[in-house]
Length: 192
View 1 (cartoon, one colour):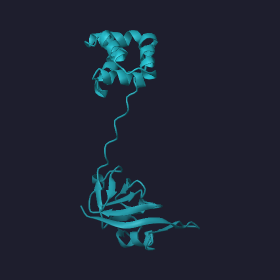
View 2: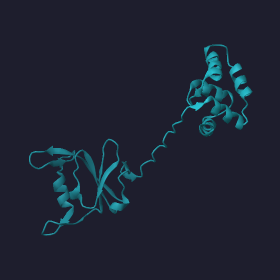
View 3: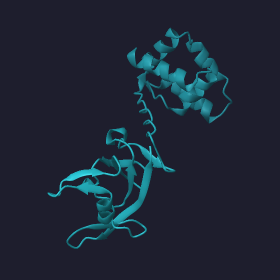
């Protein structure tokens, strides 16, 4: 697909009729008129390019796609003429280095883990062949100091546990449980 970049257009006058020009000073209305055909009643017939797109210069995302460029208001937008059908261009495409590419997929939503009770955590551990004694041994093997004392208190006295608590992460690591394994156990614990 051929893509012609007509440049970044900005508002040049807002007195009466709004006018826009690109960085070379080319007027949007003159450009559009030279690349389109109209009937005697002023109805749009066709354009040299099958699709016209506006691109946000900051994000490089396509923000608008039209067959008729007269429907576009290119204030602070890059204007593209594209040898394609408008349906071939989507508003989330990225324009970079003269090419249009599909937008990268949205990152997966971060899962929110609710706290689990002491009972839920302990039941889940033993149901997954992780003995309570192995947790206590992992805590006992920690170097003497504040972190070990906090882990002992957390394990013995906490009524609820947070998935992202540093002590829990330290103990999980000592038990050779990676992030994925802890997530799986946490999902199970929330149902226990």
